[in-house]
Length: 177
Image (cartoon, rainbow, N blue to C red; front, side, top):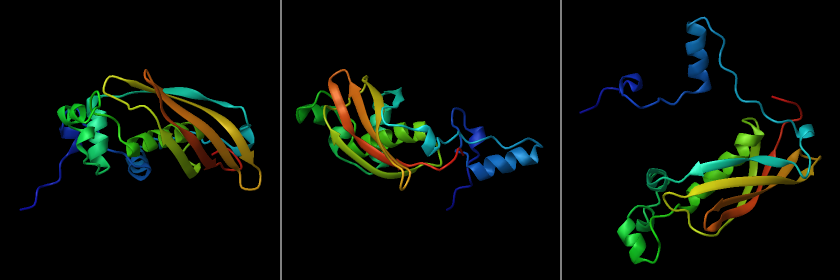
């Protein structure tokens, strides 16, 4: 038996993901201009020492469990509080794939949608538990004129200390996009 397609607009509280193509098509059909993508930084705008704006991410139990399951990490310490405590943790905690994804989100949110992530190198520290806030900070540490690559040192901290530290390399376009 096949299920009929679900109408996202009919489901209260849910938002259907919008792609640029469907958003542009919807806007065109309504006689409106397509919404603009966020601006991407140009390579010439960036210099070593530039500080990225802070990003705070509240760590809810739902975020921790859902992202672990979405990344197919079924380790019980990411979704079962009793088993996490039995194994010595305070509660369930963020998995490395989610930490990596949040680092990516932080840097690409600053750089813009036309940047190309070339490398993410991270090291985990203290766990991120429900109720914590993960605060990201970053600084441009280097640039390469040859390939317009930018190196960014990133740190994500909670009340316990550094949850994730590392570097991210992105390639930026020559001009603004």
